[in-house]
Image (cartoon, rainbow, N blue to C red; front, side):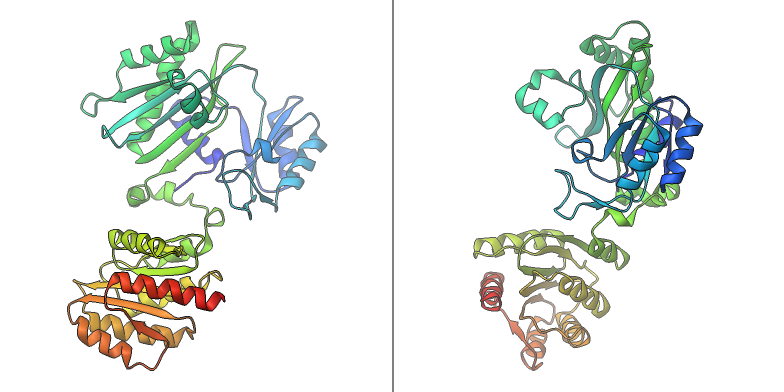
Length: 390
């Protein structure tokens, strides 16, 4: 789960990580009031969306009048912001962050994440802040320092000093870096974070370290331990179908193809998608209905699939281990009737009572085809999609 910039900065402040003074608002009048309360002669107005590249897309503006703050807020709020990290439709701007500008002397990069190879928390550090870290890694890999943290002893002071030397910091900023890194480490471990990124972490003219930007992603599987953070979820920043899927315990990710998949098991779903591509088609989604599949879940899954207008055929691939295939077949038939399904449905059933399930589907009188194996199912689904598109 992603947090907005202003939410991440609130969390930063709790852990002693300094950020520019600012207020999150949802209207132009509130933006003007926020600027008045912050004081000063210049302000930064930032659109709050779950995507990077806001500045290049007009989502970050520096203004020097109170009217300018209000105008910038009115321009951003209620629109769809399209950046290189969003879809063509963009993301809605419902809140903005009004901040005091920072006296930036240097821009640094600092991130914390889990390295899957070493299975350890790693700090990624670079003196080339303000840039895409992917570009830095590709063009100048030596400009990035990776510090791996031993889970037994945690982040050590010598590692913070190593980072300070690597960045060429001196005096007060050298000492502050240890505070920032220790704070990030505690924030990361205590809140079950997947990724925290500060780009840029700036050195000001007063030799202070400030987190000018903040990106934070939480582990969805651990949100039950963090009800306060879970309440920060912004459904408007997510795919609507994916939000609905979560409510029914379905794992759904929308893709760009025309062959929809409904599978019980993540690994089986990946194999199904691979076979669809092998047969010349493109999967329209990843949809795992889980091991304890029920008729209600199948019905909700069909509704999600049909909400995608690109879908031309549906491939249902169920392995009946925990559940019986005949019950799944009954659920598919009933769900197809309930949602008025007209698209071709190809079903592959294997496992407990698979033969009975196939007989039920074959005699249903609906546009449901029974495949003999997974390859046959993928081939039929792709050819059916092409027939519908023709």
